[in-house]
Length: 167
Image (tube, rainbow, N blue to C red; front, side, top):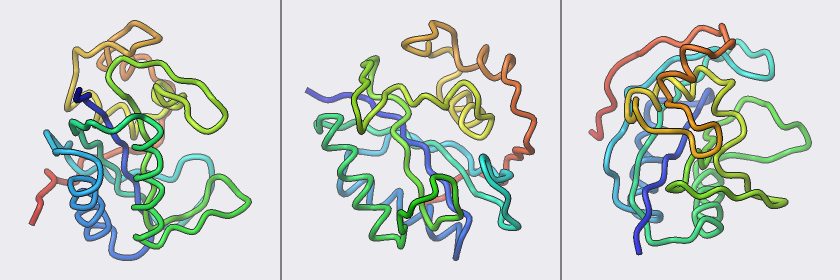
């Protein structure tokens, strides 16, 4: 059975545009069929200071993989794109892929929390989510992504850069 998954992508090191393109291509190969991509948003770093702004976007895919398998694939894609995980949680990176939603599933274990706990407080996630699914309900909070964006207290700059282009 296939499930719809929303993945958040972010990059602030290297060729950011190419990092996103390569990540979307790998997601299509490794995780599932791409249904839709949000625009690319340029954003201030969240959780740490950096002179390098992020490019962020959300990708909606359908997959037959289980949530844990999607996590394993996203970690592999990050590593292939040069992500090095260290002691600090928030640092500059070539690629970060978060599983935002896996259908309407709610999962909370030691290495995976779905829906992603940061959705409601991160404008750089809510803007592209609202673009792709404005009336979709958050499975736990039971409000739409449009409503969550209106209530979001995150005031960091998030600007739509351009539509995503696969080539």
